[in-house]
Length: 371
Image 1 (cartoon, one colour):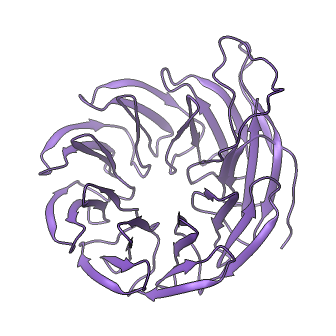
Image 2 (spheres, one colour):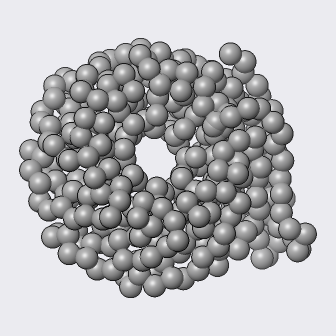
């Protein structure tokens, strides 16, 4: 394996294909905010299909080369790598000083800050869903159609519940309830104390992404091309929004607007109360990863290998950044203070952007800085 560090701007992305050129792209229609430079990139031995986890000064990524990597946020230096028994499609989750991740080898791993295993629990199916931590438990869905609640302290499986279809997405939790989608097209609401089902609603195809909980409603997408909002207390439908392609992107909600992408290369912004469209824009490739909102900018990666920075109010592009292969997961935000000597920006530009982390299919984690 070769580690490369180059200087670029600050998002972290994971790449999934053959190596190529990195660069910026955009229309020559006036002043634009663009990525300043590549800070570093780091190559692994396999694709990086999930969102990096950024915490404690490190970027953590899972790879299809069967490893989880911890890299220094500042330089991209490898601090440790942890070997699992099979490919890692599950995005890491960090709670305190412990990293939790699932593997295609049917196992959930708890890894300490030194890269050593604290415990592992075996399920009956491969794990593609990221773990969720809440109330001293780790919740994770499996391809065996079950959701597992595991004590984070003792690795004891406290309960399991049959969901129905394979669980590919992360559980969303709020006020003692969990909400999770499955490949049988259902969204299930569970009591987190014992896994008892509270309600269940169906769609026409698979629910592959994590729902967003906003006030009294749960918003989620389906590969049937619809985004749904249901009452989080009883599952009653509030609205549905039709698109022209399947939705595998988890919705992001901010300031009364729901943002998500679909397989027809479009990003949609929808009123969370009414389900009415606020704007829609077309990118360069299919969208699998979720939008990331930070510093007044909406970041979206696409299968054409481009990271787009959009105005969340209008959908207009601030800049686009080309990677060497498909970006299939959400960019991760790196919390870093900007230097006091930062040059002044134009009045119409959005605020100065902080570092971001993105993973792509080419097996590279890339961090870029914007100006």
